[in-house]
Length: 98
Image 1 (tube, helix red, strand yellow):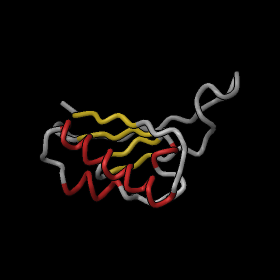
Image 2 (cartoon, rainbow, N blue to C red):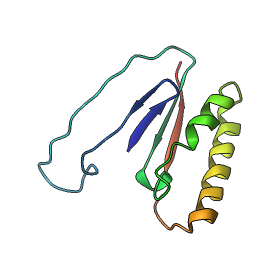
Image 3 (cartoon, rainbow, N blue to C red):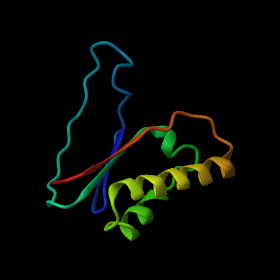
Image 4 (spheres, rainbow, N blue to C red):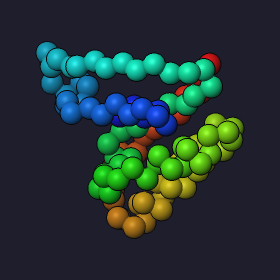
């Protein structure tokens, strides 16, 4: 899972949580301001394009309600799927920081 904040991005290079017993994971932190948003997503959201196509959506629509932003992310995922004909898990969570 990757945690994305418009100004910060935390990338994971470890195996997915729960894949192997006893696996250790590195933690990371960053500070945020009230009113920001977080986008957490699985690798299927970016594969196989492996590009940062969601960043402009978050930046360009930072002031719209989170439900409308969710719809924009889904539209973008559907466009990516039609271009790359991918079939992978696609899961994301949007969070308003209060």
